[in-house]
Image (cartoon, rainbow, N blue to C red; front, side):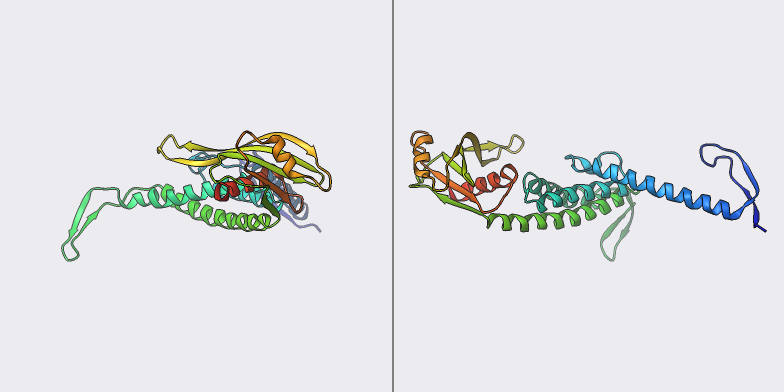
Length: 284
């Protein structure tokens, strides 16, 4: 004999179906629940993957943008850092490494200068402690927002710091596989020159120049390197880079550097940014 039971389902159960199940087969009902839970788990998994797929980037104001929820914000961070670490694993450093650094710096600034404001906000005076010479004030009313912000910021800083460390390690390993050497004589006062990027039997020729970029909101300026693609030449096994230099040099801008990656490394995401960093620190 099958076991039976009287089960009452609330009228608001699943889209308003108001029904009363009486004396149904418990084994069948348990199988139904197991099947339903499986469907719900599958839906949750697909939804999570879809949400994470759309969270690969972070806006400048992601922390205070809707949806303001701890779980949602941690999903955003996990998706962003997972995408960045995936790029690092393929030796694609930029702009992902600099993006992680910027978000990490903003969060640390926010933690230091914004969240600490809670203790500085003046509220009504409710008493005086004469022994300790302290004023007692009302606690700042908080609906949980400050606490949630603290939790999100702490989680994000920890996760971004780990991702940033991974990116820096990959950057150091990549730099060891990129050989940079001067071609001929160098001028100490040059404002630009040539980059010869050799890849197997081909060489790309870039023109570079230094520029100063001014920050509009602080009046500060920093030095940058601009590159311009000129040509790509088949240079064979034993190229004469001095001839390429003389052919493409611009007037008195004689400074030329040969860039030779030892392995296949993404050009735009890694090789050129590494070359620019080298020029900023050594070539000017």
